[in-house]
Image (cartoon, rainbow, N blue to C red; front, top):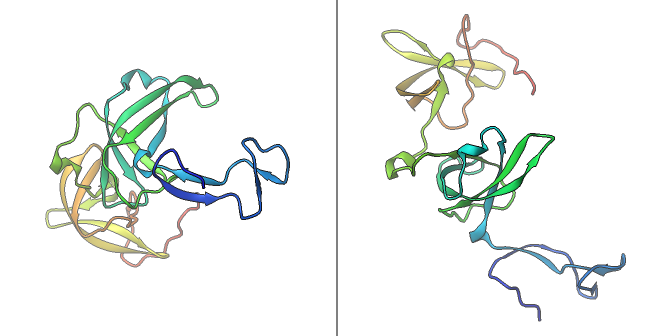
Length: 199
C-alpha cells in the first residue's frame, strides 16, 4: 500500500502493475514516481513582475485573481512569496499568489490574470464587470453603439453604459462576456464584411 503525505487528487498515473518502482529512477525500465498528486486547496498563481515594479509588491498584499476558464467569477488572493532572484532574460521577479477563495472548477496549469491591490475588495466590488475600450464606442444623444464581430461581419449593437474604468467604459446591457468588438469603427456599417487580423 502506498500512503500519500497529504489529501489530494491524482493527476497522472506514472506506473502500471508489474512496473519496477525505485526512489530514484536509475534505468529505462524503472519508474521514480507512481502517481502525480495535487493538493487542490493549495493551488497558487505564479506571476512574473517587472523588476522595476517589484518594490510595490509585498508579502500579504491583497490581490484580485481572474481565471480565463472561469470568467463569471473573481477570486480573492494574497501574495504568498516573492522569489529572491531575477530572470535576467525577462527582467522579472517571480511572485507566488495564493487563493483565499476556492472553486471546484479550478485546475492546475490554468491561465490567470492577477491584479495587485492597495486594499482588499469589498463584497460588491468582487462582482465581475463587463467593459469595452472607449475607442470602440460611438455615442450620440440617443444611444451608444459598438460594432460586434460575428464571424466575418460586424453587427451594430446598441449598448447601455455606466461609468468609466480607466480607459474602459462599463457596459451593463447589450453585450455578453466573450463578445469581440471593433476598435475605432469609423466608417463601418451594420453587416459590413471584415477580416480579423491573425495574431
